[in-house]
Amino acid sequence: MSRPPLPPFTAETATQKARLAEDAWNSRDPEKVAQAYTIDSVWRNRSEFVTGREQIIPFLARKWAKELDYRLIKEVWAWQDRRIAVRFAYEWHDDSGTWFRSYGNENWEFDDAGLMARRIASINDRPIAASERLFIWPLGRRPDDHPSLSALDL
Image (cartoon, rainbow, N blue to C red; front, side, top):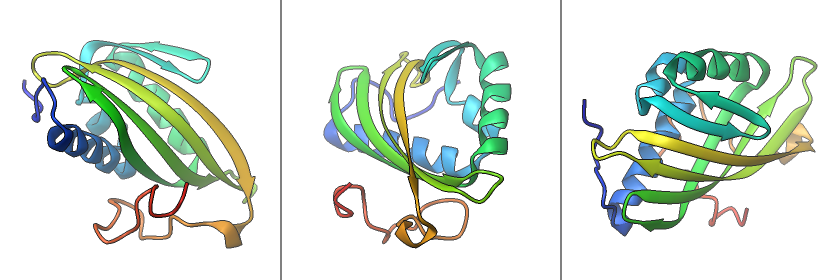
C-alpha cells in the first residue's frame, strides 16, 4: 500500500502531507486515521507510548471520546528527506463543557511507501472560554478558506 505524496519531501509535498493528516484527524475516524501509519508505527503522544495500528485505533477512539467537538489545524514547520515537523493547535471540550485549545509539535518519519513509521508529539492544553474559540466550522474537514495557524497568529 502506498500513501502519496512520497518521500523525499519538498515544501509542496510536505504541505500536502500535513493537510492530508489534518483532514484525516478531523474525521475523528480511528480506523481511517490508522491506515496512514505503518503496521508497526511507533508513537510518543504526550507521556503515552503506542506501537502499531492495533494500539493506535483504541488510543484514538479513547482520545475522541474525551476530546469532544475536536477541530484541528496543522502547519508544516520544517522538512527534510523523509521527515516532516509540524506545529498544530486543536480545540475541544470535555464532558463538563469546559473548552480547551491544545498546542503542540509533531515530528514525523515516513517509510518509502509514504506511511508514517514514527510520530513524536508534545502537547499542552490551555482552558479557554467558549467565546475565545477560533476553530469554528462544521465538524469534519477544515474549509479551505479558514485561516491557518499563522494567519490566526497562533
